[in-house]
Length: 309
Length: 288
Image (cartoon, rainbow over all chains, first blue to last red; front, side):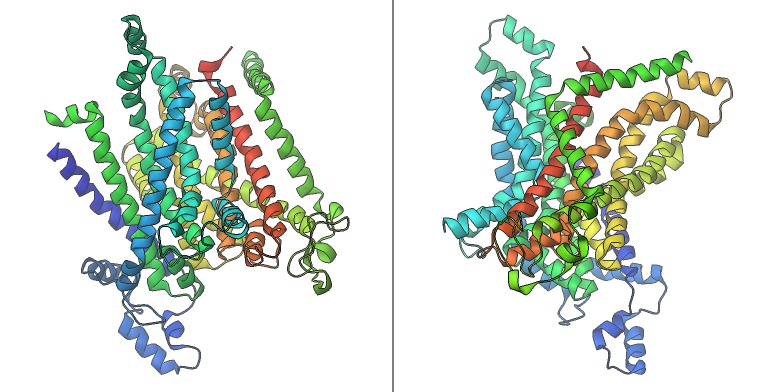
């Protein structure tokens, strides 16, 4: 098992290097001179050239990338073009809100999606099944930001139950969490239902039934654990959708997280922040995926067996 | 000749199964209506006078006989803007799926068919792209290139490539060692011919399903990017940016967001219904 964990941890290094390389290359495509952006249009040509030297902008691409990676390892992601503050500070200050929002949403999506999926599969073709499948279909067809706007309209403006914006207390998280969770919840519900249906058809379930086990026992003892293995993978993938989705959800509710930081940095062409925020979110996604894979290894005896020898 | 009739009968069988699926047929009807609206947008509502021209005297008006869905903060007819917005969304949906489908499909086909080192290099590159959530990757690209329709298309296309490469690769692997491919190789067919004539038709099913569902999610992502101000810019009647404008007036004029949102939901829903229906119709296990 330790071997597996160490192997997976080592694999994280090339992934992170790959992410940073891709994002660094994309951001390097930005037209315009960063030195000019920092100093503004009135600065002299000489001052701009000096700053270019200082920032190392005249160096070749690969050299700039290597020095970026070198300093990021030490926690230095450069400084904001606009405020001059270190990027890392900005990102680290905003990340807790974004992570909280993503975690709450994942919890909500799994806590509702898995049971609904199981019930739908067990009571296949019932009213509950039909209703939840239509609900899931609608959830995957609605843009999350529209769901957010409609929730604001109904629960904040018409009913005045939840705030339009702000997360001073837990109440402020309710609508953003539902907004962000909606899509993943639908995917998890559908996935759970279809894997459950697959498992119910298996021979060992028929055997369990034949030896007289109760339906309850069959569902809980024999089906759920096996059905949930592929669902765990889907949950991992959905975390990426959630972390990307926070950018949109935070904009809808005007929440001061990493997403709104990213959007405003893009508007102001503050590229060090853009680069830092995207890399940060992508690395967070990789780490969460690693954790999911480890959970997978714990619950799936096949993976465990492979590495216990 | 015999092969041709067989191929035809396969698609006829799929269509027959699809036709029995009521939800898929509802989806298909909605999509046909949406496509018709997009094609005849100029006839339904004039672009310049209704969708673009501002008229402050009639701003934020509710639903009426003249303005079916009301007017927005600049006095523009929302119905006309939604009609013209359907064009933008469908064009983006179709192009931002077909471009990555062709590029990703080629990458996946080459990786799957040849295997070895080439496969390793190509797929590791795809894994690197997949490590960044698609919407974030698109945001990063738009951040670098700037907003606008073409840049949005480029961003969504690049973000879509790795997904299609993976699907095509895994489908190619499952059939490249089958006997009919071996037979084609044995009689000396070239690689291109084998890939196009023998492998492509056999992997089309899952690819079409994925592409249909892909158009649906791409329309949502494009609207989302425009909503946060990184996609198509006002005054163009794009659904996402219309919702972003509507957000400002959510208290006074909620009709700004309701109708536009329903337009997106209907379009995306129709594609999801068709995609799901196709998946079932193509699933050999569900054959009757």
